[in-house]
Amino acid sequence: MSMNLLRLFSGSKATAPVARERLQILLAHERGLRGQPDLLATLREEILAVVSKHIQLDPDKVTVKLDRGPAVSTLEVDIEVPNDFEKTKALAERRAGAA
Amino acid sequence: MANVLVVTSGKGGVGKTTSTAALGAALAQAGEKVVVIDFDVGLRNLDLVMGAERRVVFDLINVVQGVAKLQQALIRDKRLENLWLLPASQTRDKDALTDEGVGRVIAELRTKFDWILCDSPAGIERGAMLAMRYADQAVIVTNPEVSSVRDSDRIIGMLDSKTVKAEQGERVIKHILITRFDPARAARGEMLSIDDILEILATPLLGIIPESQDVLRASNVGSPVTLNNVASAPARAYTDAVRRLMGETVDMVVPTERRGLMNRLLGRRAA
Image (cartoon, rainbow over all chains, first blue to last red; front, top):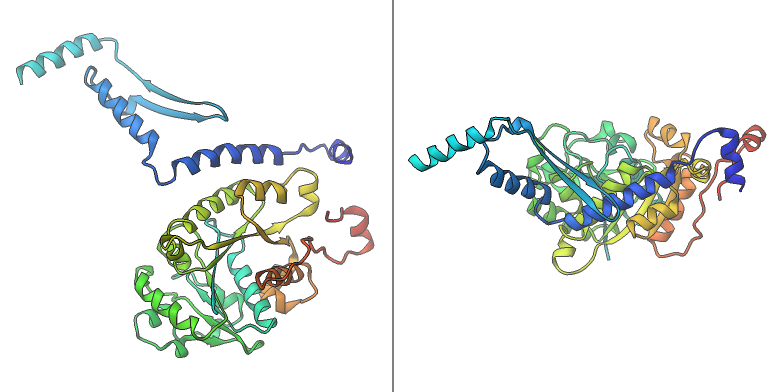
């Protein structure tokens, strides 16, 4: 009550609860990962390996994002594919066949 | 029996060196025989905070490498006869510190002192690892601020896995020391509260050192804050922390500055 009144007068908002929540989410993840191989790096590598079997990838056109939430996290892999990739694919297959 | 205590944090600038000097001096004031060791090779500062910067001849690396004897490198405090400093090297490469060499020095110190306080460098590299390596206890210095709390959590993980104690299946006794705490800001919800920090880090509290101008004043003149102004708020907080280290039960309060009338009207009291 007095805290709210104080805040009303000072015009500032309590930011400590935000700090606390962000830390709790972050540390829960970091503690789980301690001593483990880097999951994000592994996923990125393996996903890219699978995709590059079919499409020639430009490493600069690939973005990987991870958003950690309290209940679920999302892994977002964004790969820019050129429109003529079907052709590129056919080429790659022919090349693979020739080898 | 000797106690090896590392003062660590992960993050830099949170008050490790200030705390090492203050805790070391307070332990010595309580009659214990104390040595404080600076592990920050290349960036030594414990000598400066202790006011011994002009008396450094040999350092930890000289002793580790056998260039100097331990007795030659130890510097006795001018104010407290049972307080000693083992400085870091300012010029050597930090790789000159070896696990085995540090182990040997600590083992020798154990036979001569009641308390061996290791002032860790920031980070999680070699110097920080070696500072905690042989510890029986750890004081994790934490500011009420997100990056400091995160780094403390990381350091707690390392204390539980990378120390000799941990490898032997034992535990390093860990304590949180919160520094630069501002009770008024915490009460207004602008700063992580003590309860928030302790809940997140799940580690017992050793003490709360209030933000205070006395800390800077003490380092300006090269005197541990517990010696420079015994009655100051941070000195009382460090002295309470030391009594807890020595096994006493002391109520956890945040000592406050002795305020003038204007301050009392404008400021809030500590909870």
